[in-house]
Length: 308
Image 1 (cartoon, rainbow, N blue to C red):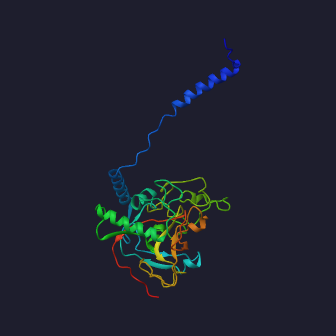
Image 2 (spheres, rainbow, N blue to C red):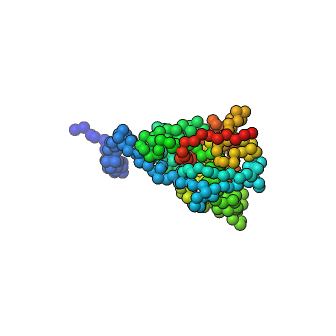
Image 3 (cartoon, rainbow, N blue to C red):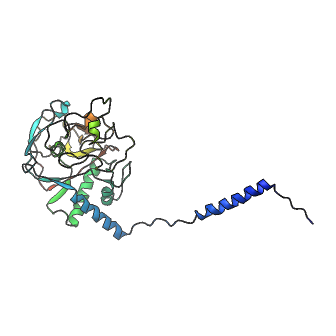
């Protein structure tokens, strides 16, 4: 009879336990069904839901009626040279402004892709340039008209710089829509605990990846006007407000200066750059995880040009 070599007892026990463990693990290794892509019909339904939500979240702005003043003082005598001279702007047309910056799920539903670095369906969309922002507004207009959610005489566009500041100030004349001071006693460096309640800035943004509207709104119910992302506006850049329009319309194009304007500050910025009057010059080609957009719904009107 042939002698069979035997493993020591402790080895046999280890082999047995490994066999049991293999059986247990195999029970968790069953094939997982691949996640199904949504059908064309489901995609259409979701797009329509997001379009209706966008319209529902528009805030009516009626200058000269109710709580909305007809005129306001634009700029700041205490701020940067680009914020001067302070000048009165009188708005004569009603419009609607989005309560939130454009979220990523809406942008993707309209454009077919999401360029953002910091992903989240209700996070603000970023990593898009000036042309992409305007292209989105045009395509959103077409979709809303197609579904009869806005009139044929209405369009979606970027706010003018005057409209943006008017809405950011929300009837206030202070540095921020909540007052003149961003810091509490004892705050140091980039800390700004008063601002923390209203805005994502470099003093409180670390470790956060928020959806739109996570903090307090301004007095008109608009969120993230201070901070989160810089927001494109419709106007081209001018170094100051000399000869700026007094009616809130887009300032005429300066062909010698192709720069654009971003307002509001972002999660990358110190509190002083989040003031209502602060302006930033950006290239139309600028793409940044700190730059996005907010939309306005308005009646179609010719752009009135100021005289220089």
